[in-house]
Length: 232
Image (tube, helix red, strand yellow):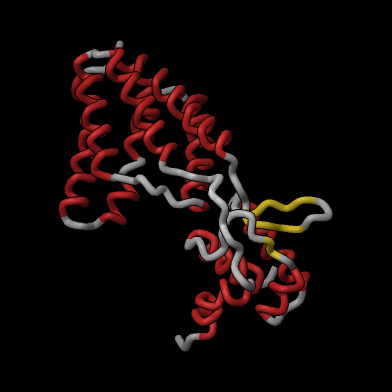
């Protein structure tokens, strides 16, 4: 495979993540071929690459379109994450020593420092690692794999939709409070906080809100076409 399909795929992914191509947007091979001045075969290869990221759905006789998640699927996703982490938290409170919490506490402190510096990008990058640390402390590889699959699906949700009630400070405060509850062995409080944490995130996504498709793919993809043709 030449680099051309990968270049086009990279541009399409960037446009989706930037919400220039909202969920449900049809990605017609003919129109995309005209946009890039290439063959439909090249576009087909590019869409296969994009499909591997989960950002595009391809259906028989209906072609490709930007992936969509329903409200029910979104809530079930957060319910599943909550259930896994509640089970792990309950187990950890029964057997971990104080020193083993330090890696999670360090993550909370690092996020706080990034927010104080105004580096929200770094804060958003490292904040979710808190949950990875929680699962790693369990030592249960099967649970870690299940959790990782759910997190990948949540990342897809974050790429496709805007969370209109996202407060990084509040979420990091939840992490700090969860650590305090777990260290003190407050089981009910810890499990309730995990549930509320994910419910608050889920409420911020309105995946059922109607979204207008762009007037044309060429118009929506224009910024990434200009990047391709810009001088080095």
